[in-house]
Image (cartoon, rainbow, N blue to C red; front, side, top):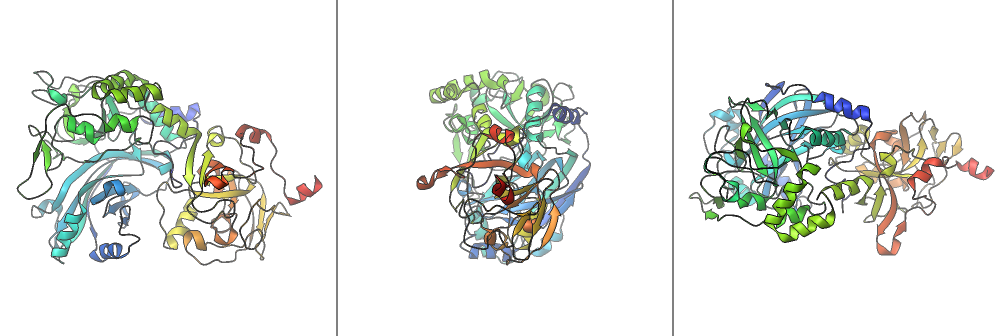
Length: 616
């Protein structure tokens, strides 16, 4: 279950044709040859910050994050995020380094970047340019990649869109041991960031990017960050293909295998964000299979120093689990068997052993003119090659793919567009929803743009004002964190908050929710539970703007809601909770009076206010 997080792929509503055309036109220009902005920066992470995280038992676990101060590049604010003990249990004891574009401005940004984890001998080394430092400061590999950075609700990793991206580069235990041995040592991250372009990020851009990718491939250009499926082996070199996809002279792609485009270089060795493979201009495209099992098929070296132009390094040694929660995906990645023998080598310096065969390294550079036809991971063009690859790898995978439908990822993708499961983390909606409740929320209302009504429960991404309140109170929000509230008023309604804490809508007291926690009826203003501040009284009268909703928690004393941060933009609404599935003893519809058919709701008038109920 997602704890108020969306599924990994898309959260976009259905697109109007004009939106899709605008998105496609924004990508029709020729690929840029030079970035519009570049930045090289060394970001230190103070020892006292590391010590504070490790000393607190609530944060000294995988998933705990340290954020760098924001920095500017290309008109956007950026931040480096350090997961000292790993980004999650599956990455425990691995140091994760991620880069994030801070939300704002309503735009998406194409960027390439390189990040390396550094252990510097002393604070004085921070003043030395990275190229001039003594060798041996880098720990692990240098992570080089590119992505289109956008708001989390428009992210889609399959098409190279995200709000943050990174990799796990080094052992947490080894790093902490080094820092403990010498108190002068400084932990830092070197960042090289290039911004290649930006454009407005409209609602539905993620779905438009998927539609554009399936049309663009296999004949069009490829872009950094996107996932593609090889439809053939390509012309990687003379001598034919060896085991695991290696030819005598170069790497040949494995038909049906998923690859992420990590980096693109021109024929002159200059970085690019996009490459037109049909132009004949040459260049090198660095590819990385999206699973560890597939990367081991070719016996390529995992870990250690990179090779080739640009110093490409072996990275992302764990499964790239983008979309792995979807039907068939985990089977497709997890049971692929090795096609060639591998040799485990223990380096002389005592670091972790690596897998090696003839010096090959992931990501692997493939000449642009030797690439095979490529298809979208979610496109139907990839289906025959994927089925053939599954049959070669495992009979169980082939059976699973047939069972889940025509494409192994479409079933889960389509299901995620209609509804998702979420867990409730706070007490702001007691007694309607309790901490730990698991709910199912439908997304049809948003997809077809049905109106929201007074009394509806809504899940939404926090607007900027709410994010500011949470940060001011010392809290943190992830890119996929959602809030749940009840609609008290819609666009055009007049809302007033009385000194006693009551809510008045269109001159009449607001009808109370079916269930409420103990406290003043109608709610006094308070933000204690969700953002950490003390409750404070607020008095106002306002008209809810068109396209906005006024939302309240069912437990006023524990809720941060529109009383303190204002109306909720309707575009922030993600889904409408309708059914509780856990605990078993309380399963069923959340509001007994709610109509589970969203289209019936769309035909019905708005729920009446208190006075209207009396008249009826």
